[in-house]
Image (tube, rainbow, N blue to C red):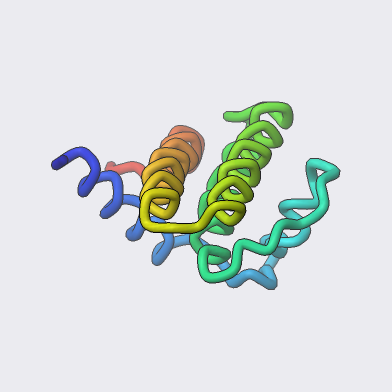
Length: 124
């Protein structure tokens, strides 16, 4: 349980530290542009849009800096979109919990990819 709270704290901190708005800012692509990089139609993530954008943006930074292939970046986006669609197709407390747990794992993964290539996220 401590690991979950630690990952959540890291994800929230990363969202506050280095994520531009959904429209993109100062060289950062918009949420729609990030989704379009893989040729898929943009997904409307509703209230989860900013959190999903944070994960996509961290993965994008890792991809741009050579720490993640374009194929893995696109597979990452696809897996999140599929899980979100599954949640929205059958909403309810259990589905929301499954989506939240899945997404928290994906957010931590994206943050670790970015931290591996972005010295501003590493101590030192």
